[in-house]
Length: 202
Image (cartoon, rainbow, N blue to C red; front, side, top):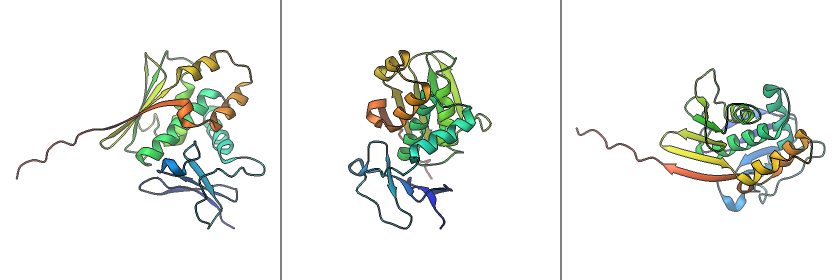
């Protein structure tokens, strides 16, 4: 049977194959959200109540993190933060790896902060090669996503950065824990609708 991961994200709909008997959806309704912006459906089924279904061997979130690590070369908590931020941007703004722009602000241009950018690249398709992702130094760790007239700002909470500054677990354990945390626990969020310029008079 052919299974796919489906991101139902405004327009256009984006699908890619995944070797697991499940669907993954983004819900615009907070009432139907499981706290990650995800709900999982069985192929050909109808949306669930919004609660994530834990897969037998590996969860969808773990699979996403593992795929992101192929780009980044290892699994770490700042990579996971970037993946979560990118997934939230797609959920809110829609998926467009060509028109979306991502501006990453880091406290300093060094690891582990810059690992955040690789997670964003994996999740959104904004890449250095297309010049639609940039990294700037100064201030808090945050990502600013722009698509059309809408801008989404996601700031990593200070409490999360403080936890990661004194890790009690391995990097991989922290990364997988972050992938399962709710978006509100990870980020301060701000959505801005830019005013459209008035039309030219005829």
